[in-house]
Image 1: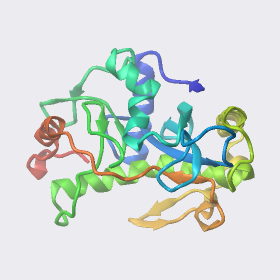
Image 2 (image 1 turned 180 degrees about the vertical axis):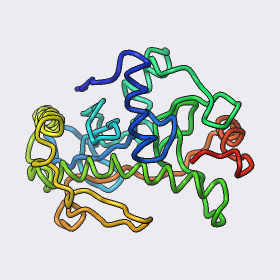
Image 3 (image 1 turned 90 degrees about the horizontal axis):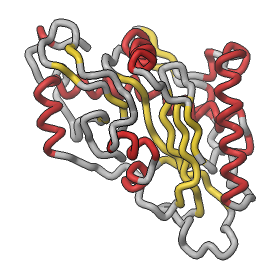
Image 4 (image 1 turned 135 degrees about the vertical axis):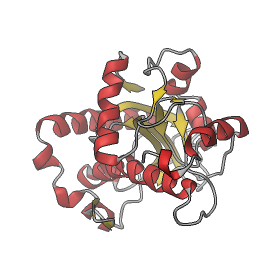
Length: 266
């Protein structure tokens, strides 16, 4: 079951990109993706199909959000038994990247740079590095290094999808505990919640998501949103963080990230 509010033209992707650059200081980012295991009661006659790595039964919500906490893609229903790397490979987003129907803008130069850089979706270590997917450098890096600067900027932008999931679980209390529904009905409930979320964000954002609910940052100091204080949320589990590395794309990314400090625009 899939929700599509993806841009259909490069100019529309550029509008999302502008928010990530102006608000989150991450140029060329056109979205933020992640997934959650939605825990269910044991479905009847399902065997191990929905049994995930944390020994729960679940279906997966895979999503891409924009810089304003809105869902632009939601793919609901992947069985919990599928590896978290396989979740993306089985998603509609992966299929669109493979057949070049995502209609992202063509690569362009960053300010003060000459090499053309692809537009990308921000991700974490649960996903494989690709031309249009950026993930953090693995390991610890020296303060002030290019890798650490990039990781900090990527992490800051990725707070958007984390907060978006936090909003859902904080406001829609059906997501706070394992859902006592069969997978097909659970999919309908989750998709309904996502539609309501997008509607409320667009037309009643100040009422629906107060500033206290979301993470905020001032002078480099992070203030966590109130959604993080609710420790009783046991229905939405994070994807398993398995380091995944693609040497080909890693080498390409280092070509335009690891440059002299004077040439970096972050």
